[in-house]
Amino acid sequence: MGIKNRITIMNFLQFFIWGAWLITVAVYWFQNKGWSGTEFGAIFSTMGIASLFMPTIAGIIADRYINAEKLYGILHILGGITLLAVPAVSNPSNFFWIILLAMIFYMPTIALGNSISYSALKNNGFDVIKDYPPIRVWGTIGFIVAMWITNLSGNKDSANQFYIAGSVAIVLGIYSFSLPKCPPEGKTSSQTSITEMFGLDAFRLFKNYKMALFFIFSMFLGAALQLTNAYGDLYLDDFRRVAEFKDSIVVRYSTLIMSISQISETLFILVIPFFLKRYGIKKVMLLSMLAWVLRFGLFAYGDPGSGLWMIILSGIIYGMAFDFFNISGSLFVEISTTSKIRSSAQGLFMMMTNGIGAILGSVTSGIIIDSFFTTVDGKNWHGIWITFALYSLVICVAFLVLFRYKHDPNTIQKVMD
Image (cartoon, rainbow, N blue to C red; front, side):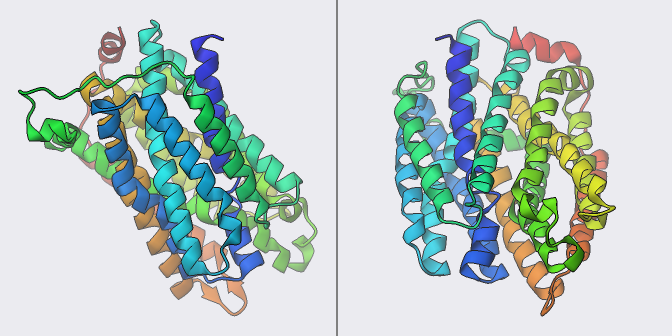
């Protein structure tokens, strides 16, 4: 089997694991368990807490001590075992701790998967800017397939979603040991400094104004991503409270409707090479931020009736919002760093987006929604989405003014050559 196909399988399974439960856990939490919104915000913060340190630690280990593909496999096996234990949890406190443990194992595998993919492609003479996006699109397809399986099998409010995710994680962990070797490139020597020994070289990127701002705004966009993941499916499912919409397609197949967002990803991933080489990271990130404004704004005014087109369009726009930030950001980090700190730098990007950003978005949104937008009659979704849209707009304007970057199309090509 060719290198591209092997990496494609890895990406498919990587995001299948996440898609099996990430979008539907809110329905499981509120409808099956009946636990509170503030506690739920804490659950989504587990991804952020784990991303504060695990991607960086895993990146250091992969850069210094052990093959990235082996570490990747070990983490997935441990994460799969943990997910299989989730259905046994009977209270929100224990649920938090077991999900946190699962995320400690899972979150660093995203950055490691990027490093493994980039390394394998480069070692076999491929251009990562051109050849990686069509491979990464299969990760999104895996996410979609998992969402559809969870919804169509009647498990969007069932604990079975965790059995599905855990089983696939273990399969991927075993498969990982057959992936192309990705050995450490920053092994220590007698001349190695303490900073280099512990893989802290990547933090030197903060000395560069451009990179420091890039990471800071990545953190703020990471917060926006967690908002839509946490509440999107619950928002659609909540239309069952409205008599005229309770039997609508949107309510019965809310997870499938949400999957329009991931289907859109598959299209926007494929145009990333064109946009990144032609317009540069600043304009691509600005497009992502504007897309977030529209994503939340359309949700605010949409409904399963005459406003269905807004919900669908919001899903389509999500592809640009997510890909132009997440995938392009990862590629930007890749071409802006040396091979010796590749995994550490990807881990740092993960820490800022899915770590600090996720905590910011999850905890803050949980408190705000409970305090200002929740009544005995339910949640004020219009107010919630308008607030999120205004947040994204502020970030967009600030990035436009503060981030200074002059794009040179030839620079990216030279780095890749």
